[in-house]
Amino acid sequence: MMTDAEILKEAIRLVSEGVSVTLPVRGRSMLPFIIGDRESVILGQPVQPVVGDVVLAWVDGTRYVVHRIIRIKGDAVTLMGDGNLVGTERCSLGDIKARATHVVGSDGRTHYLYNRGRRLAVRLWWRLRPVRRYLLAIYRRI
Figure 1: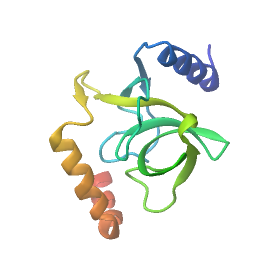
Figure 2 (figure 1 turned 45 degrees about the vertical axis):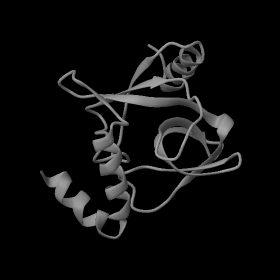
Figure 3 (figure 1 turned 135 degrees about the vertical axis):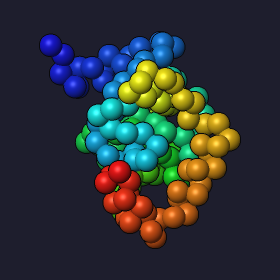
Figure 4 (figure 1 turned 60 degrees about the vertical axis):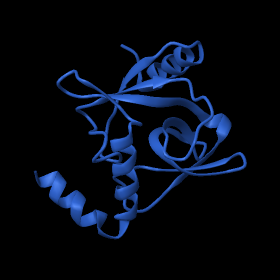
């Protein structure tokens, strides 16, 4: 059986060769847009990352995360999970190993992450940061 580190290493190698990889996501840090332990993301090459992209990145020199880019300044990238109330991670552009393009639901259906409706929902969600705690509490109870 492969370890998580081995799986990530192989996924990154495949993506760098141009192969799309489906990777299960764990945790609640990307709620409500990606549901950990139930959904997966399809990863592709990170061509010209931009603010709003969901990426697989090596952050803070310690671990990999699948989070959204919230700022790019030169080579410095700041990431934050959609479900996080506080706290960001930092990496360089070179630490971004893949870009998530789709979410695969528990029913097997695939949803594109960057259509107009999703981009609008993400912008609205970002503006709701002051009340996000309450919205996430309600969401988790549903």
